[in-house]
Length: 316
Image (tube, rainbow, N blue to C red):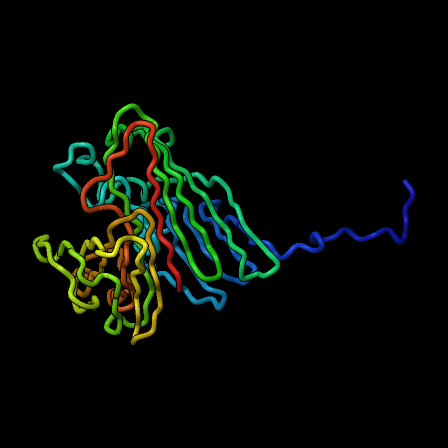
């Protein structure tokens, strides 16, 4: 081979293409992080397919995660966006899910990373990246299969843009008998001061007040947090109508749902936070509010061979 002294250098990037979103694994391949050319980034723990960080281009964290959260796969994460499936809370009177632990098994199972897709154009503000994760009856632990013996598959997608974070789930009944389930995206949003927060978009909506003997009530005006709050709303204006979190009159988060009819609003306040071993700091409830999109007021029935899809988009 002739050594040419003036041979061209290898090109580090393909000319003419805009910067691409980057996807990296860390912590022994237990976490996936996607970074947009703008600097916006998201990190997902494969245990539970739990989103544990969402930062904008300035490095500002949008999600609240407890300082004592277990991120080693030993238990469900306190904070971020845990995925609740196939039961919300516990349901001892519902035969199919009566044996399952609190909030089901999705947040306690290791998911498979199925890959990424991205879209780019000449402008970096149009770039996005979608990460797909999978869980099925075939990959569940045997102990869980015994608790919920249905044949199913889940695909959970996390899509990051410079303006928003979307999470969506597709539930497919791969068996020959109907499945009844509940699903919820248990989103912990980070705020500066819970006493200055107002939640709008839930006006005139019925809700179940789990702090007051599960009484059914109706929301009058904006929601404010002044004590322990645990409410399941079915918004009167439907999933496409935004639920808005404002702080001192300025919108900080907007949540729009697709085919998820319910919204849970949760804050543990002083006593509840003090009683949770993985909730730190104990006054951390002042910097978080859970706005949780789901289908949990009743049960969704999925016939054999059918699929259900639900999603939320959070804009900041």
